[in-house]
Length: 198
Image (tube, rainbow, N blue to C red; front, side, top):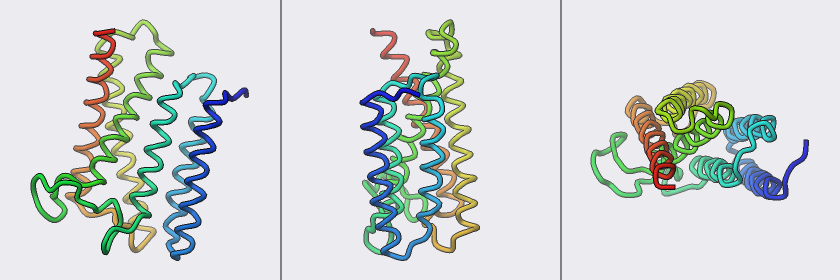
């Protein structure tokens, strides 16, 4: 499989921060990192296997890589008595688990917005006749929300396996799903507007 120079750049950047965080987690005795690394390697493998068939735009590959970096930083960078995922960026409303706006919520919105973009790209590449249809927008949005729900299942498994995960409780899960949906809707709206004004 031929890999372009720009794709190698994304790959080496991604592997560099995975290695850095792995060393960081090991040095702190936090073996939960194995879960993060396994998830990241699974995602990298999925993207790599479809690289030539899908011809992902370089911008999309960088967006995916930055999502991975934000995810690993969220679980690994200490902030106060917790980690970056718990950091309240701006206390817009609520308190405790219902606090909005946290780093975790922004990463969820961003990540599943990127997921919607990826699904849109796959749809219009393999079914070009759908490019300017509602189908090309609604399916990626709902698909991203479904993958967001799968992400919550993976987080639930992490809670069962590891004693301290900083994943949160019911309200956190519900807010994650809301921000996943918001990110997906924002992404497909931006795609629709960009195609309309192109």
